[in-house]
Length: 304
Image 1 (cartoon, rainbow, N blue to C red):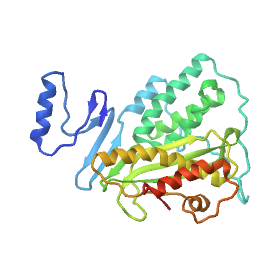
Image 2 (cartoon, one colour):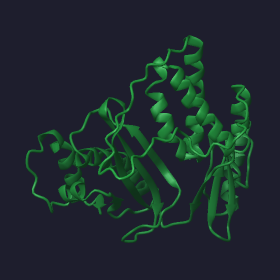
Image 3 (cartoon, rainbow, N blue to C red):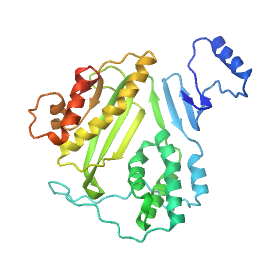
Image 4 (cartoon, rainbow, N blue to C red):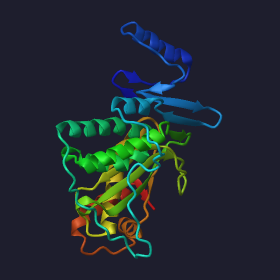
């Protein structure tokens, strides 16, 4: 992996790694970590008996709280965002997102919100993907942030202060790319939906065992969709397009890929792609369906 001047190498034979190190030392100032305990600010804890690696960012949240002068909560905050009340007994949840009428923040307040989102976004991608849903919602509001946006940011800071050392555990696998894809219908403002995906490396099993994510997707879909199946197909399309370059990278690294399994929880979306449902009146989603069918017929994906 390469991030400008911070990189890690996998090697067979210590002498080859030392040869690379000596060559670099002849021209550059180089520091080394033979234990592989830190990369791009991420701390790694290796367990060679259980074949696992846990990624954390020790002390990062403490620095964020100090930087933005946010006090630790008196009561633990277990959720990254405010709970939306469920109407029990209803066939479907019909509540819409309330329009935010709270006072707008000044330029300093908006810049503070944007800075906090930026700090936590790297942390979320690196070792706490549970924050991504909340962060993407706040990101859609940050250009014209209000008092409600600030309250949501403070709620999120209370949550990370409650759990400052969260991390992701990766298990050794056969490097087969797999994913779970899902959509949350009409759950965002302006009648929009959310796409979610968990992309990970596993074994070539009918239902691959879960693992730490290679990539997590939690994004508000810009278009307004007319049905749950349409939103599910949009989320599946987004997930599959992100997996194509990952498949290519793994192939070039020597890890031959079978059809990448993608799990969905909507039988209509699965039926469209696998041709078990006759499609009619689908012009609005025709492109996504046919792209997914094309890639499936090329042997890139297995939708189940």
